Length: 199
Image (cartoon, rainbow, N blue to C red; front, top):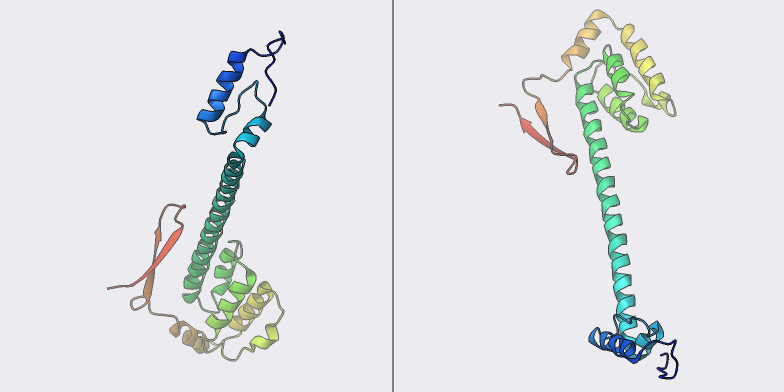
């Protein structure tokens, strides 16, 4: 602590030191105004330095936790939006036959969905049709989806009329299907998906 010297005419007055000491004592070392040095507060109230460091650590942790929470929420919202789009694509696919699936692919290939996710659903969908049961999915291993869709389209073009009819008969009956109701909450809560039967 700087020493008060009455002979030093250029130094702070005794009243300034007393006011500064009053503030230092009243705030228990939280504030250490001039002419006192910061070291004075730390030496007289060492616990203040610890408290200040703890507060700063807590504030930093809160900031980091808030940022991580916000990022986690954004990731979850992004995941839900993706799952919502993927579910829409799967429902739309359910009402196509191998002969009409080209229009489905034209639409959904530009909707920011991973090709592997679409491809898995196409393979599962194709097995529902009589014409698709003879297709060997192993032949398409490592192939791009556009190539698979081209093969399906070629295969559908070679079907006889009665085979095309059999494929159409494999489509789900819309009257007895479950309908997907999408409740779009505001984007902060993302998408909720409710499945309910048509009555």
